[in-house]
Image (tube, rainbow, N blue to C red; front, side, top):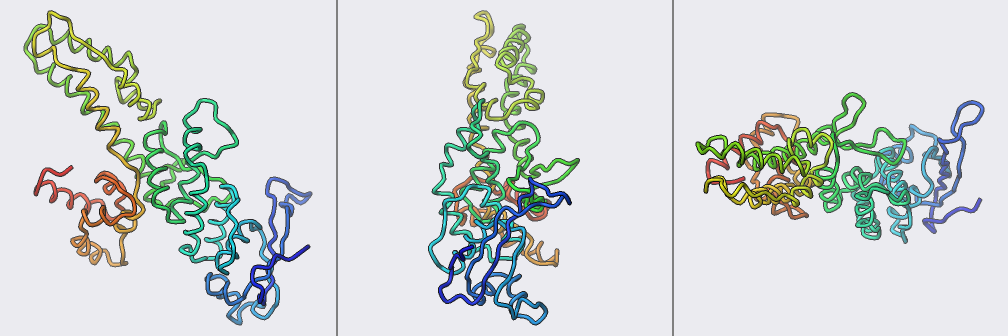
Length: 380
């Protein structure tokens, strides 16, 4: 087996052993898929990983004095990428999404400096035909050769890719049907978003913040569509009952009413598309108040809902996380948290609802902050 030279002056050989967990031997153990030796710099690895710092620079482990180290149950391709990155040599980008997940797994396993890996992921992301992935996910007959864009959730988060994370979280909020769940590309069950973003319950991993945003979309469209109902129910004319029936009947015909029932089986994006087909004119004998432009009212509801949520923002997630172990310190520091500064200091452009659902601090502090803002001006 030829050794791949990462560092010409390398003083350490790393043997990476990759297992195939889909195949089991007579003892029900995973079989070896491939092995590969890498010539690397002992000092470079130690500086880039807490694991290797302890392994190679302390007297607690025999590997500190050996010329070779064996790593088992790792991906050869992902480990090669990491070795290339930390040694500053030409890096491989021609790998699939599965290897990206393996690289994330290695980062967690070996306590790598993830900021060193983020630029690589950003370049890898730009080289993919991401638009085609999203387009494919919206088709009835999916191409199995293209990844599910939902598989980008965890990589975009762990590699700090703000643009990708904003896009995929918006996609999930508008396109998923029912409770939003995270999907994974590897057998690593420990690779998932944090509890506030991801919540595990009844064997279903769902996005707490994303599901809250999705629920808010339902509230907005229901609230704005119900404006006509509320006005007609308060009217005193004789034609109000017929007009109200006609309005709701037309919403039912295009399968957007009642919204609570429709939302259980349809995505918000589908509901928005159906609303574009709405058309209703009351009977010519109806009074002036009943003969309003219901199509315009519905389109207002449609546009508000369509534009409401931009996705989750990694910068807002980070800016609003508790920074100390002292909850009182965190609370008073929150007074210095200027919402406008957070939004305009982000790497991605978004509106206030993204900040709201990306907020990772205590909810009561966030809600009090919003109450003060609303009392100062008509905000949100």
